[in-house]
Length: 478
Image (tube, rainbow, N blue to C red; front, side, top):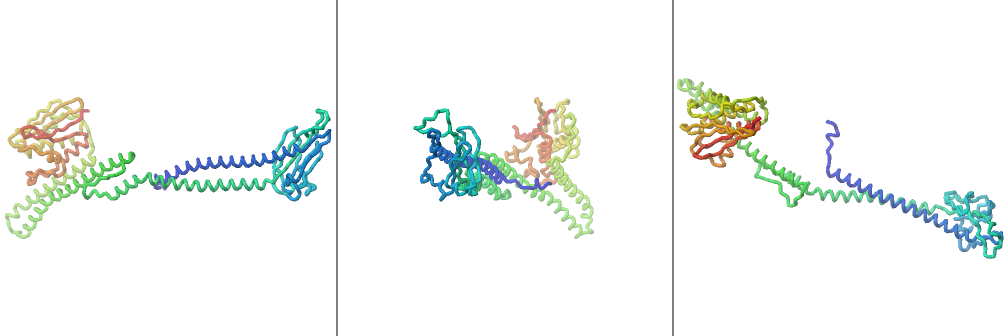
């Protein structure tokens, strides 16, 4: 057997893993969406800040009769002063540098990027700032607005290009913080989900664990027990009901096994005691002719009785374990019944006078001959032994569309009680009046029931009027 087949599977572990995985994927998707949205919003805010500053600086550029003026006051935008040197701007008139921020003057050889693009277009790109930091630049191409005193024709334009740059260090820090928060939230979320799912699954599986604990303390060898539950769980009720049925059946089987063991010991105890007694007497009085003349025959008779008991027990075991191979064939019931009567003639000398065979000569059944012969032999022998000796035993049959019912009836001294009728097929069960007979062991009807179950027959016993006991054997028609 492979290692995978030997591996134990856990419903709880599988539920916890699957539910945790599904919820974790959903949470991860939600957190990832939020993280991307927040990152995008932060970047948009940064870009919008660049755009707002660029638009403000463009309003400071004025075309005064062809002369471009840039009215910038550093005290209002100190980030472009030399003391800060954190943000930069550069202005071109056409393609010539027109103005640079004071912060950019700290790096004489450095210039912000210039891009050739259509009028009124702008573009944001990532760059390395003159101070060596990572940054982002907005480059915009526009027309200088004409002043109120400008008399220059409307067809004359001054093309300007503005580039402003700002460091992205703080932006990157914010994005990193957001990502770290996202990762930590995901990790704690997964563990939190698993903890909650485990608690919920444990609570949901409590009835199943409770059922398992009740099964552990069951003892079918003691008093009758069943599994009871104060909490009715819809999914577990069918299992509990079937377990209770199984427990009840096994308790009955255990009780039957104990009784059967006691009865077997009782049946074998008597002949064994007789053998021991005969042997002890023969050893004590070896020269007593009365003992020696009958010793051999007595031992043989006792041994034969033990053999009958053992053979019947073996037949009962074979029929109960389906060890008998069925060989079905067409059987004329009346012929088989006559054969059984002939086999029983050595035990019952007046059998032909006592039995009335009312079976139809042409009534045929498809069944296993050995099983049917054994069943009829035991039923007829039982009727002959327990029936009133001067009363007839009737064998009759009733046909229906799908079955044939054979009835074997005999007169008895008194009707059997319901308890006796239900126990009559139990192994080694005997009525009190018959237990003293050495030839009856209470196994015949048990063998009948086992063979009927093996072949799909039905058998029952019932009291009829005038103290008549009837055994009904129902056989299916092929």
